[in-house]
Image (cartoon, rainbow, N blue to C red; front, side, top):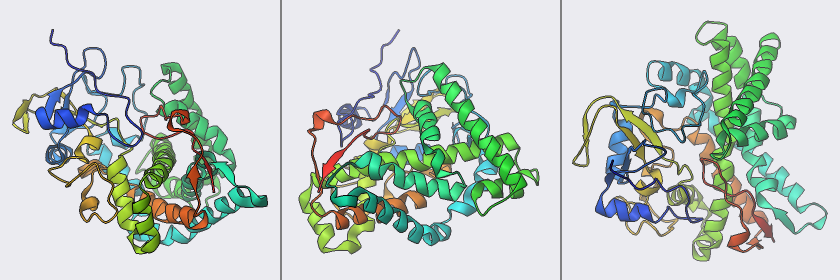
Length: 395
């Protein structure tokens, strides 16, 4: 039996695992092993990644035999988890929440996001405080409070649902712990959906109950699954992106100085940080439903595929000097940090707003911000989303 190298799971703090650059140059479409004898094709070039993610012959249906999931221990998807589905179910369920995540609607949320940032910064600096764990004090609560307000989830319950989310997204979790966490989270959101059915409010869960479940567009179980997906993804990715972006900018003082001199560069800088860091580093998982040629390689029906977004976003064919952080880079908006094609992240406008507001607010309020722990003392996340569990800072 042919042995294929394992898909890299560890990575340096700010860069992809070094194997990706080597493979992208030497064998950009190659076999790797994700677990057991499951050996999907790994896609590392930007052009090939976009092609695969836009091709309907590559399925996202995680229930297909041979699908290259994160682990054989990961439980099957729950109702409403449309990111692991194909049309028509994917289309129907995604459409339920699209009106709440349009660019125009998210733009109207910007003052509320800014207010959350100011409140958190006030709390960090209260009584003359000059130290904090940036993850606990700012990076995690900012997107959590925002997604809670949008969904209609009481923020005071954040300790409960963050505990469930950690168990669900931690690649080291035991299967029984993941199933228990999912049951607890779904039970909590099911109770909330029932409460909003009786007494609606101006929030997404109320709209799911009154406009989707009541009309038969979705079942209550699907609505709960959709809400769970948004709650998990709505804070986990941005919360992990924040501390890494801070580290990246502090390690590149010239780039940070350029942003201080020209605040109008922040939107482009956020795109460049998203490209440079690519926290969704476990890869976009697919399975071929037909024979398809990618990068000169024949991928057979039934073969799994992992699209390495972090490798594609560092492809020199797409980005000159790709390993360098450059807040002036014009091409950053073409990055794949939010995926591409049918499954491109539904919450990308919200994530952009949170970063575009939250990062400058932090650096403006705390101009002397610096990290107080050596890199060895920073605990990396064991989530499928790359990040940090702690970031001690002073100012």
